[in-house]
Length: 299
Image 1: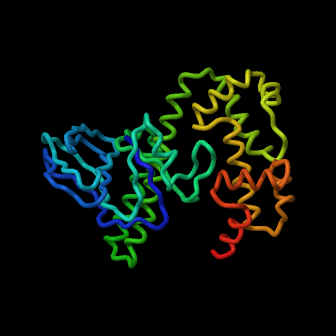
Image 2: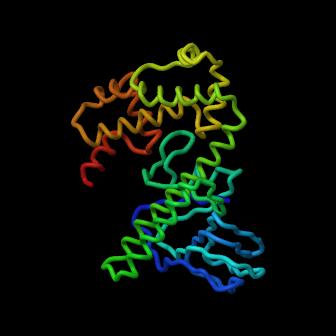
Image 3: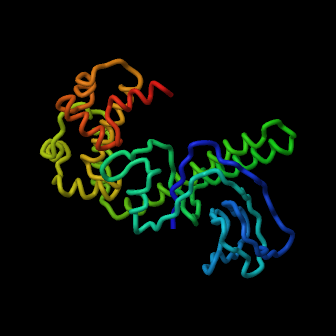
């Protein structure tokens, strides 16, 4: 299970602290109205949420959903950080079924390009073991700074809590993505992975040029169908879907920050003419370039 989280405003953090009960401890039974994030730093915790049981150990991150009853199943010594939060759009979806990501209105990018609502988001796992020592240190430091801010009596500590919590979520999300990438990476030859890195860099640097499958085959010395299949496995989209996203993002930037004509923007972003750019822009974003530009001017 994973969650798609969107951030249009700072999350509301009700509680954030560190808890280390003396001796063995069993989590009490409750049904909370907020999301709760646990980060176990020592010992073990045995939890049941709904009808599913979980065993947490040091380095594990666990996200409890609101509305579900959770309780401990057996005692154990433990120490953990926790956060109770709300005011965040959190949409659960099964990892093997990405239809929620492709069709929900809060997505950042779909298979066909950018979603209608251009929002910031991250993917969070329900249950993740943080293997990276650096990531663990980052999460611990954020918690400690946030907790100390309240202990010191600082004003607006809840705003600080919210900012630090966002840092924590980003570290968790990135660590989860890295773990998934490493799992795929381990199945592929080193040469193939190097080619994927070269291809990604090339698309981001040379997006304004005409790029063909044959050109990429010659440049990388690999069959295009194979390249495309591996690229999609790693990136979640085909080579040209990814290229289209890069081009549209650059067009959006130029529409919002310059007074360039649409024909000039088309030339700058790799589209054959302003008419094709306009069609692709509306397909990817749901609005025309002119409407997007007017909307940006109002903000």
